[in-house]
Image (cartoon, rainbow, N blue to C red):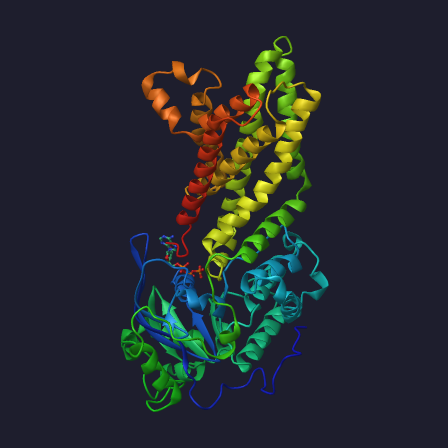
Length: 563
Ligand SMILES: Nc1ncnc2c1ncn2[C@@H]1O[C@H](COP(=O)(O)OP(=O)(O)OP(=O)(O)O)[C@@H](O)[C@H]1O
C-alpha cells in the first residue's frame, strides 16, 4: 500500500473544494507545430489549482505535446500558456513543477535511492540541505511504496516499479504542479488504485495535478477533464457535467458523442472555461479574479514572485558548483556500477602502449617519438567515445529532458560530465605514463608530470568533443561513426606520421587549426627539453582553450525545449 502518513483530513476520493479555486494553468489559442504539422490547434482551457485535471484522448491526439508545453520542454509553442502565473518554460517555474514523462526517465544504472539523491541535489544543492534532502528522498520513496526496493538498481525493477521511481523523482521538493504523462500505464489494478489515491492525497494537500491517460475509465477519478482529439479540444468540465451535457452514461460515451457531433463542441472551443459551467470559476470568484490578474497585470515574459511553498524553494538556475559536483558524483556512481567499462578505460591504453613498445622493439627511438604522442592521443579517443555515448544515453533515456526542466544550469551539467571524466582521465593517463616510463623505458628529457599534464588536457579535449558531438547524433551508432570523422583527420595531420613543416600548404593550414597538432607538439617539447619551454606553454594553452571552447559550444547546443 502507498504511504499516507502525511494525508490531511479530506477523503482521498472526495469532491474538490466548494469555492472555485485559482488557476494553475491558463491556455488561450495554444498552438504547437511539430515537424511542420500542427499538432495542437488553438487550444483554450484552464486547470484549477489543487485539483486533478485529466487530459484524455486517443493515442496520437497530442497529450504528450500538451504536457511538454506545460512543463516548458516543448519548442514552437504559440499563443498564451500561463503556468502558475508565469509563461510556460519560465526559469522560475522549474523548481515548482514536477514532470513525469511517459517513459520512466531515471538512471537504470543507479539504485532507486541514488536516483532520488541526485535529483534532490539538483533541486536543493549544497551540504547545508543534506538532512532535508535525505528526508525528502525517504518520503518520496515511501509515497510510491518502494521502500523495500530503495537499494535496488532501477534497471533491475519491473516497468511499473520504474514508473514509480520516475514519479518519486517528480514528488521531490513538493512541487505545486505535477504534470504526469500516462502515469498508470502498465500498472496492475491494485497499484493503479493506490496511485490514484496518492494523487487525491496530493491534491488535498494543495498540489495541482495534470494527468494524461488514454484509458477513459480513469476519467471518473479526476475532478475535471480536458477531452482532446486530433490536437483540438473536444470539451472540458467535470465528468458529471460532460456526461449530463451529452446524456451519456460514461465519459467514454460522452467522448464518442462529442467526437461525432461538432455542434456539441462549439460551446467550449473558443477558449477558457465558460462562466457558470460546472467546475468553472464564477466571474466574481477568487479564481476568476486571479486569472484576470495573471493574464493582464503582468508585463510579457515577466514572472510574478512565487507564493506558497515555492517561495522557500531555490529558484536559481545560474552556474552552481554544488550542482556541478552532484552531477560529477552521479556520473562516477553510474560508472561504479559498471566495473567492466572502468577496467577497459584504464587498461586498454596501457595494453596499446605496451603493444606499441614491442612493435618497435628493434627501434626504441621510434617508440620514444610515437609513444609519447600516443600517451595523449589514447585518452582523447577513449574519453571522446565514452562521453559521447554517455550523453547520448542521457538524451535517449529522457533524463536529459527531465534535467533541463529542473533548475540545473547547462554549464552545471556539462561541467559535471567534464569533471567526472576528467578525473577518470587523470587516472588513465597516470597509469599509461607510469607504465611507459617505468616499465617500457620511454625516454623523455622533460618531467613525466608535464607529459601527464598534456595527456590530461588531451583527455579533457576528448571529453569536450564527445559532449559537443553527441548533440548531433541521433543514436549510439551515429555517435560511434563520428569518432573517425572527428578524430582521424586530426590524427593524420598532427605531425605523428609526417612532419607538419613538410606538408602541403593547405594541409599545413588545416593542421594549424586542429588542437591535436598542438597536443603532439607539446609532447614533443617535453621529450626534447628538460624544462617547460615557451613553445610548450603555448601548446598547452591552445589545447586548454580549445577544450574550454568546445565545452562552451557543447553547453550552447543543449536545448531546454525540443521539437
Ligand atoms: N518529433 C515529432 N515530429 C513531428 N511530429 C511529431 C513528433 N512527435 C510527435 N509527433 C506527432 O504529434 C502528434 C501528437 O503526438 P503526442 O505524442 O503528443 O500524442 P499522444 O496523444 O501523447 O499519443 P500517445 O497517447 O500515443 O502517447 C502525433 O500525431 C505524432 O505523430
